[in-house]
Amino acid sequence: MRKTTAMIAAITMLAVGACAKKAPEQLPPAPEGTGTDTGTNTGGVVPGSQEDFVANVSADRIFFGFDQYNVDAEDQATLQSQAQWLARNPAVRVTLEGHADERGTRDYNIALGERRANAAKNYLATLGVDPGRIDVISYGKERPAALGSNEEAWAQNRRAVTVVISR
Image 1 (tube, rainbow, N blue to C red):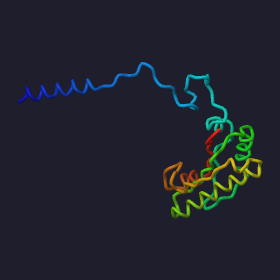
Image 2 (image 1 turned 45 degrees about the vertical axis):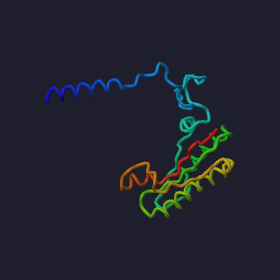
Image 3 (image 1 turned 180 degrees about the vertical axis):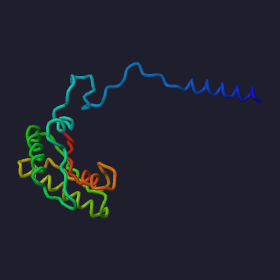
Image 4 (image 1 turned 90 degrees about the horizontal axis):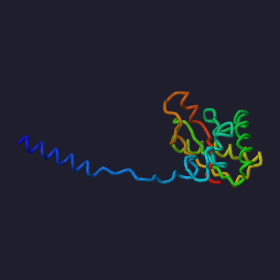
């Protein structure tokens, strides 16, 4: 019985070892825009990309008070920085994502997130950004930036985030 068990174990080990995949001789190129490809991009950030946006604006998001969607002075400064970047990159389109904290119903938070994203869009439009370049989506409370049921987490989740979608 022990001999049979040992023989089965040995055969299993050989079979598993034979199924192991060999590493390819050459790896495929990294996806475009990741900065790790070996093509014409010799390092650095691709102009007009999300990485370029994040590196060159004061922030990619603005924050709101509880049950609020007004753009305050700090938010205005952030959006002015974003508008300047968008002016330098006229072919770029963005999506403004509206978010809410976990309190309230799903429907209420979807509507609140949309009001937050639209408030940011409207302010960017007053700064000369073509509203046709800006899409709006609300995730409500479905995509929290911070987990937790406390004021610190809630404050991080009440936001509008600007995301580059094309160039």
